Length: 425
Image 1 (cartoon, one colour):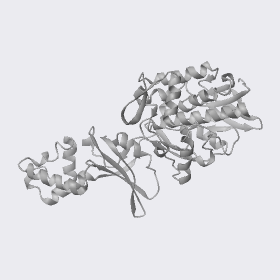
Image 2 (tube, one colour; image 1 turned 90 degrees about the vertical axis):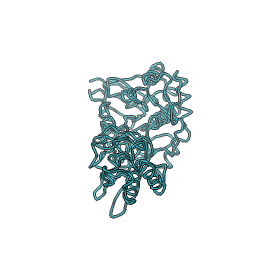
Image 3 (cartoon, helix red, strand yellow; image 1 turned 45 degrees about the vertical axis):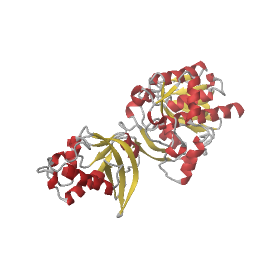
Image 4 (tube, rainbow, N blue to C red; image 1 turned 120 degrees about the vertical axis):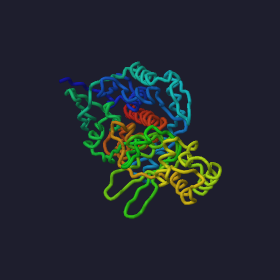
């Protein structure tokens, strides 16, 4: 067993938020007095996989309104605004530029390193902190973090002990088990007295009870919405537009990922997914278009009625869903059948069975309650000297670089505040 003493700041977790926190803290405190503990053999393991290795590390358009808290209260939304208002994506992009990582913008404000390689981001952060003298220990999962009269005492899984004046918990959440995310930080935060808002998988596929396996592989633009039925009341709780991908088990694609965070297992509650394959048309307009199409294609087989408007396999499925036989010609369709096809095309419904597991989720919804953390510094309101950064907090955003924007912004805020606390007392 090894004993190490006298660190001013100990950062638990060397992912996006932890590395940025170390870089920010080292601007105020000599790096040799900062220690980063990482459970994996390498730092930035999950970051390396971001964007299929291309690393969509920021979103230029990200603003507080893009983020969610599972507590869904007005105070939590104000908290997110207060935390992010002074750390916009433009400021983060400048920080990375100074580290030698210029950003290039692609669709929908997504920023990537000019190299289009995640390793550029990880290596820049690692070089920054190592050149400042920050110590990084890998294979060092923290299992104990205890507040004492003089600061904190920590112990890793190998029995090594460490002390620190401040601690930044930047352990991530539970999403991406293959990258070592197992909710370790929640256990540490809970032991220190913090309340954990139940974590659930987010940015993941939605599973359907009666998925049509014949639609496997279909990709189509449209709107996907999530509806909740509880005590006789039915409400739409989320919607998004984009490319819908149909799988053997249900739904995938970015728009599906973005609404998956709103699904939660609750007693007496059922969820339904509704797919609108023509969101650009009102129901009345859709019916009018199909009525005109029936006349225009009167001599064609019914099975071709929707082909050319949607992929062939989906066209067949929509006719089946509408209860329309594929025999005969389009001119023989009744007005009721045309209307039913229009309704199904605008409202294809399936009951939701759940979402994919933590292994498949990209991010965690839920985490350390925002009510117990100061938004301007990310300092605990309960434990002096304890800071939080990144996914461990009850903040999550949509696909497109928003969650890494939060990770880097919160890491910068927590690292700066911890550094100032140490150097200024």
